[in-house]
Image (cartoon, rainbow, N blue to C red; front, side):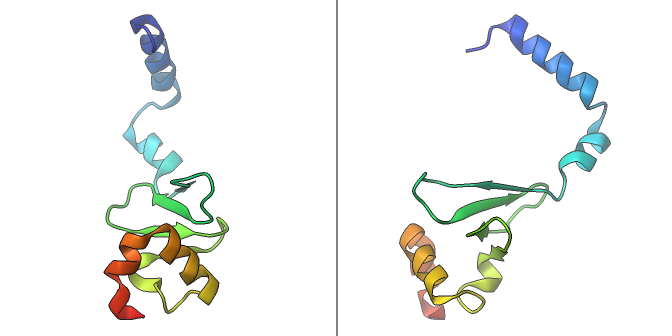
Length: 98
């Protein structure tokens, strides 16, 4: 855990690099952050910085799918199987689409 001195030093360093919200927005807004819920997953969850409500995912960090728009019509059979296995909640939620 950081002590107060270290926290303050970190915050001062950040303040020097990022002068205002506009600069922060230029750096990060619209960028994608890829992560896996479990290390063994084949599916990456994707956060689209600055956007709310999108449920994005990817298998290769190149093609990004929107769960609302692309499942299952714009996916391969193998991708559907992976998503159904790793995200059973969404597979059940969208079962009427199959």
